[in-house]
Image (tube, rainbow, N blue to C red; front, side, top):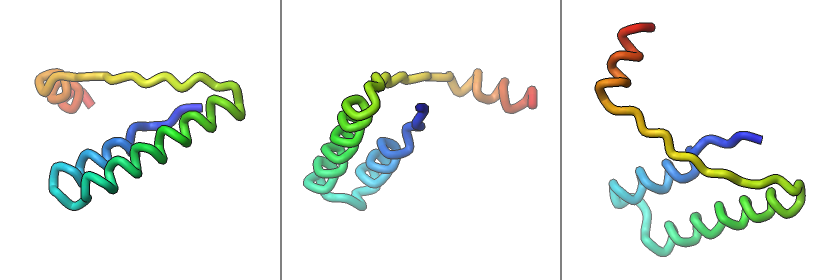
Length: 66
């Protein structure tokens, strides 16, 4: 299974713009963690998280080469 990072990104954006309380942030993070634990337990799947950073220069290069 592959999941993208949108659930984390959604919390980050709302937090930066102060559209969400810290209490709600913690509840949503707990829900995400519970989901990941459930996936690991029920399907014996290991959840791995990766962070891929691409510099602004490399992103621009990639866009120009499309």
